[in-house]
Length: 123
Image 1 (cartoon, helix red, strand yellow):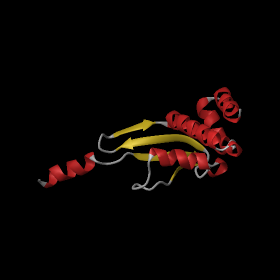
Image 2 (image 1 turned 60 degrees about the horizontal axis):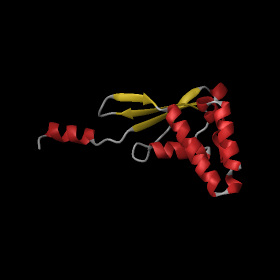
Image 3 (image 1 turned 30 degrees about the vertical axis):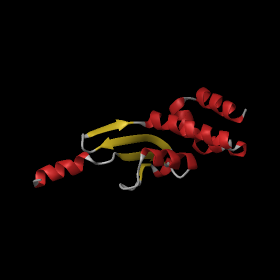
């Protein structure tokens, strides 16, 4: 295998990169630092849900090997909502999980949709 073939093969196996843009109010906006080797869509969802990433305004998914970047903010919001519903269903005392990512979810999915999901999870 020549060097160019090896480099092309290595690039084809790259996992997507995730960039999470956050709004820190008066401090401005910036991207949340993620680790190339451990960053994943599931990790971004978990970090938002746990409140480790706050003020989320945009989530980007980058495929280096394809040279593409997609705005997956709404998709991630739906995944956060689904995961919050699952966690609330597993432990009734944990229904407040929605509170951690509440503003992000409302901004991306709308107030009524989030309120319905909360009502369903706690009933």
